Image 1 (cartoon, helix red, strand yellow):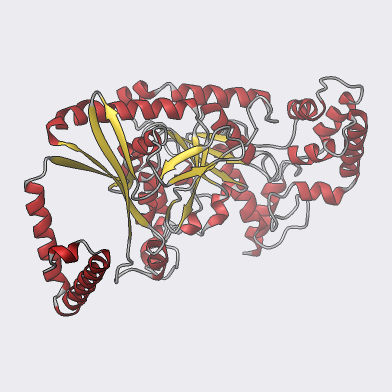
Image 2: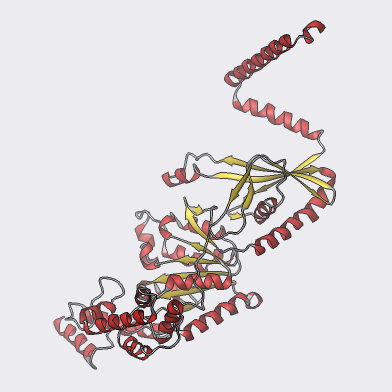
Length: 513
């Protein structure tokens, strides 16, 4: 015990405080070494429970995730608190996109923010807890979980205001956050990182719109009408007992504007884009989790679906077992697109792109999965005129007639036409260069044959047939009926063949057998 004289001596006070701190540290060290962690946790939780019995405070925990999907209340709180950061806060997070006009402010972890609503004072704290890898996971899950953390907001207030906070304050935050988001609406691009949608999204600043998109004008109008009808059709889908979703298949040769069309669709609808790379998904279960983690009213895009992964046919899935490293199967993808899990969300649009429609399983293409097939063909007259206006702001020129005639004879992609128009800021020079480019393609049969290929490995039309070519001709005839169902029909393989050639080939094959 310190005497009164000792209490008045600052040196004695410092010595006593140091001695007390050392004793406390020694006791803590001994307790950690000799008292089991379970027993320490028991006593700690008991003390907390005892203290809460005499506390007048109530705490509401709002987790970031609700099952496999994002908690909408957490997202709303995150937006709302960024607008009420008070001077008493010592740590905040600030970010800004390249095209943003304002700084985005967010709360940092363990920082307390005070708010007042109708004379009710509340306290907000963002709590972040690292997730430790579990012992039973695969190597993929180890790397994924080691980089994740569990986030939650803790809302604390006097318990007598419980009803007002639950029935008035939280609904107010939801409405306020919605208004804030609409004021600064930016299209976000989401991607998969370590098996989950990355929370660090980026703004999609793609300038492409339907107004500047170079594609067939009739097809463009049909697609826009279909999109508008879908967006306004929530009650129609509910009345008819259908899930409110839509599927689009974009197919055609490379360079015909499939990715640009996706950007135009997103800008037209103001929908976020979820870019799904199937090679980053380990199993059908992970695929369902990603579906649940998406927001409503968004575009899910799977580009080059025919070559991203090798999907197993439903007949061979049971035979293959677990031999494949990637366990995403065709049946899993079909359930993802059109199964019960696909109903867990409203207003979603699924877009598949491919250079080879004939390589996809017919089950993936039927209505209800891919509702509209959009053939992105080679450049036509309307597409050329749109490109000429985009790059040089001209609608007429003396060279237009010659160019339109060449485009009708030569297969050229919109990307190739755009490449020629970009070579000079002088419209006349660019158009003359385009005329020369088209004339060169016309007189070079090898290049003409190359344009008939979608991807390497296809045989040019008119070459000598190898063994089994008759089978290909027969398959082309079988596929003809389905390709005529598309918005714009495919150019059938072998249309340049003389009448009767297919029957002749089939007959030759029969004789060889």
